[in-house]
Image: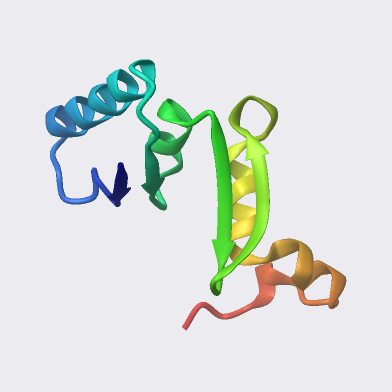
Length: 94
């Protein structure tokens, strides 16, 4: 099952129901792919995280062996920016 931002437009109660559903499906052996920017949800249900940026796989981690900060760094390309000498803290978001 593929779920794209499944909790984005939901209230807290409904979000919990969706996350329980994902856990139940996984326990029954149903593979679930969640596309999300919500790290709290991802870490609550995922066993493995694959990060895509601009259509390319830039990282894959076991959830138990990573942190939200590392995943966000992969998402925004922080390692590549650092290697190129770009300070992301000084970049104007606008």
